Amino acid sequence: MSLPFPDREAAGQQLAEALDEYRDRDNILILALPRGGVPVAYQVAEHLGADLDLMIVRKLGMPGHEELAIGAIASGGERILNEDILTYSQVSEEALEEVTARERRELQRREQAYRDDRPWPDMTRTTVILVDDGLATGATMRAAATAVKRHQPREVVIAVPVAPEETIEKLRATADNVVCLETPPAFGAIGRWYRNFDQVSDDEVRTILNRVWRT
Image (cartoon, rainbow, N blue to C red; front, side):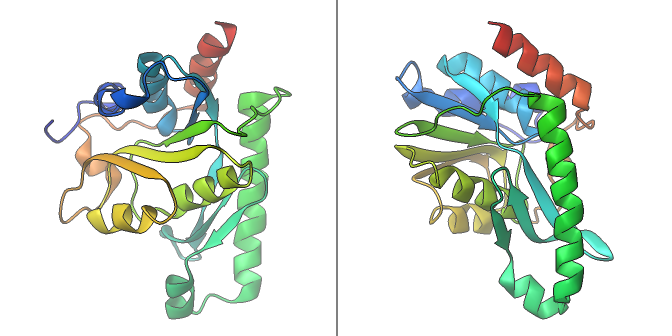
């Protein structure tokens, strides 16, 4: 493996090989974090012979510095807060609730746009593998894993192509297994570690999901 990854599809193929121990097991569910995680997760699901669905998560960006995550929300109402950053930044409760309400509206829009009225998969006693195209603080993935745990799965696995080492270490307390291909120093932005990191559109997400769900 070498950085940067050519694109999300190539990263997904490499990640799939790193998850080979789960191949053809019963009751495996791949949950992609849209939008960027969907093309990565598709490669994983194809390789493992597993079902693919979504865990929709939205970062709660700090007002005025939206790239910095003060927390995250996930499908099902789960909210995770980054208490250290909240304390340091002194974000007011009113501002936090305003950000949360705005991101809940976007989360609901995406649920309707991607899944329509499709019922959520049963995660009970299932090995759930959460996949994204990369992590920075890990807030969104932590919210996703916490939301999944409410469904009493057999095992929760977090799988990403690239993330900071400190983020991966923190997530080990959240999941049963964490698989990350690369943990480069001086991490910066996720897109730095891809040659092609074009934004994934809603249409691309729907195209991939329709391809899988038709099958």
